[in-house]
Length: 245
Image 1 (tube, rainbow, N blue to C red):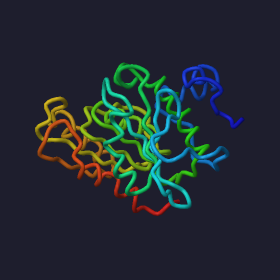
Image 2: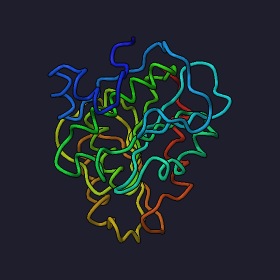
Image 3: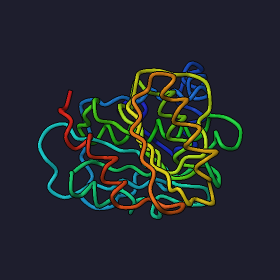
Image 4: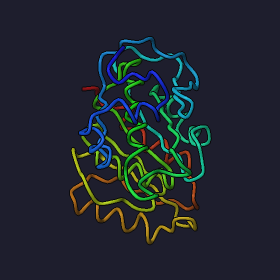
């Protein structure tokens, strides 16, 4: 059995299979999973269950060679099947893998107090995907909408040595803490957003990221708390065109 492969549920593995160092890393938002040579059969095309809580969209007619992967995080009280449509058409068109995990609770751990169980679960899911598909280490991205966007920003900056790109659709905040790598950041936000108002969210987040030296592609649009198709398409275009490493 490949190291880290599940023999039980994600929750069981998160409790039993990792070292104290890994657990400390999870609490800082550090993911240990990395692309590797696959040693298990690839999953078929379509929306596949990676475990009882996560879904992976595998587009048809995958190209030969390493593939881009986007981890897509849902908003509060949502789930993988509700968030997948945001990027499923770009994934089909540009032929990248799209992984949508489910938070352990109604929303992501950092929103409720600190990194931990959701990071551990995502580490397991990524190990599973990396064990079945050849993923391009230079084109692994984390994306999210609403609470998922806040989590994508916070986790993506903490694990910037894994994620080359962060896609945040209508984020509310970004937590301070561990920073690694230098991922590119895409942020979009509706000027009429009444759930997470743009003035106290993205218009505060973006200048701080730029002051810290991050390359931020920031786009405002006429609309509310949503992800227009053109914003989704713009966010993933660099993944589709970037050369693999």
